[in-house]
Image (tube, rainbow, N blue to C red; front, side):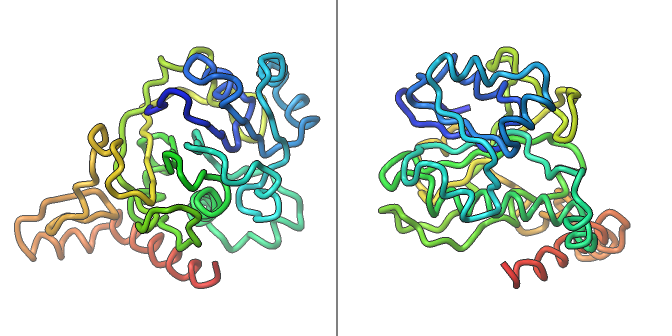
Length: 270
């Protein structure tokens, strides 16, 4: 993970705050701001072993109750400040009130998680990132389904009112493997209860509105956007049009295509 010296880092939705604490091996406390979706009381009761007091003792600013999909909530965080905003292993909580369930029952988990990440990017580039800083957003997630079905590389680019001096659009600029060994005592927690999730191969997906950023030299580009490949299924190259047609008729492609269509329809109301 690219964490340049003196970069100001903001973490979003850091469950038990163990990732933010692990960042202190790489980032000075005064350059780190951590945030959680849960309130402080919920965090302490949900995760009996958490890193909140360690961060406070180190002098790190911690904000609670931040909903990255809600503009008013996001604006509680320092504006135009961070160089890099990180959302590590994001996932929409499944335990909701009845009112929330009624409102969202027709939305698939795939759609809701894309919506979460879309707003993370939109609000980070609009309000949270410094206009003259690194201008980077990191989404770290597992490389297996259902996470791979969110199409992070191709579907999340938001239209935002950029607050930077760059002229580029917000876009996916590449990925790299997430090396969990660099982050001592980091635990991937279940978003709903005091359980740990197994560490599995994960990737860091990097977004920026600076298409010539120096970080690109260390990133892997998404090859499936090329002609002859299927970016939705990460398959190809296909030798001929007949093979492509056969692929389009597979169960997996039809499922990925439906995710794509659902997301396009949802974007019309964003």
